[in-house]
Length: 381
Image 1 (cartoon, rainbow, N blue to C red):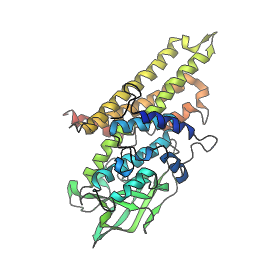
Image 2 (image 1 turned 45 degrees about the vertical axis):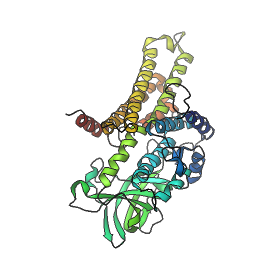
Image 3 (image 1 turned 90 degrees about the vertical axis):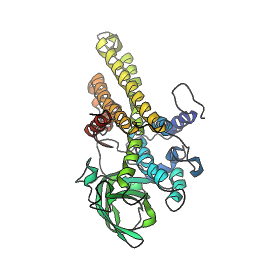
Image 4 (image 1 turned 30 degrees about the vertical axis):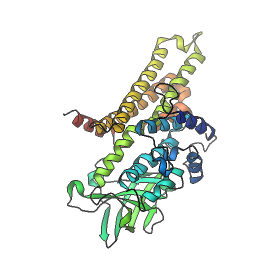
C-alpha cells in the first residue's frame, strides 16, 4: 500500500508530482503554447506519463483513484489545465485500452514501456465531423486485406495528434455488425497514408495540441488491432469510463487555485474603506466556489472508487463525476470573474484563462447532456 500524505490526500508521490510540476511551469507569452515532444519528456520525468500502467512496464501501477490524484497534482503544480489534459488524454483514452485489451505479449504490449517512459505519445481518434457524440455513426472504415487492414476516413479534434507517435483509431470493420461494427487499432503516426492537419487554435486548453487526422489507404498490420474484431465499442466505453472518472481531476487543480486566489483577492482589495471579504456578497461567493469544488471532488472520488472496485454502477458514476466536475468548474469560473470584476477580463489573466479552459469541460468526453442520459439509464429511468 502507498503511504498517504494525509487523510484522502492521495499517495505520497502525488505531492512529489505537484512539486516537480511547479518547477516545470512555463512563463511568458508562450506559456500556453501547444506542447512539443521536448516538453513531453520533461513531463515524463515526473512519472505522470505512466500513472495507470503496471509497474512491470515502468508505470506507477495506480488505480483510478490514485491516477486522479496524480492528474490533479500535475494540474495544480504546473498551473496549466491544458498540459494536464494532454497527459490525461494520453493515459486514459490511449494507454488504458492498450493495457487492458492489448494482450500480455506481442507488438501492442511492447508499446507500453515507451508509453510509460514518455518515448511513445498516444492520441485517441474517435470523433468525426459527422458524428460527434453519436459514436455509432462514425464512417472511417477498416477493410481486411490478408494480414492487414486498410483504413480510410478522417477524424477531428484529436488531442495530442501533432506530437503523437501512435494514434488509437476506431473504424468500421463490419457495417452490418450493429454493436460489433467497429474495431480499434494502434496506428504508428509515420504510417503511409496517415496525415495530421495543422494544430487547432482553441479558445482554451491551448497547451494540449490537437488536430484533425486523415487516413487514405493506410495499411495497418492485423497485429496492431486492439482486442477482437468488432470489440471497438466495448473497448471505447471502457476507456471512456476511466476518462470520465479521472480526467476531470485536472479541473479540480484549477478550481482549488480559484478558491485560494479568490479568498486572497477578497482580503487584499478594499472598497468603501473595508476589505471586500467584509461584504457578505463577496465572502458568500467565495464559499460557493469552495462548496462546488469539494462536492465535485467527492463525486469524482466516488466514481474512481467504483472503477477500482469493479462495481456494476461504475460507468454511470463516471458520467456523474464528469458532469459534476465540469459543470462546477464552469460555474466557478463565471463566479470568479464576477468577483474580480473588470480586472478579471484582462487577456492572459488567470480568471479569464480559467473560464476559457472550463468552457471545454461540458463538451469533451461526451457532452453534459450525453452524461445525463447515461446517468438516467443507470438510475433505471
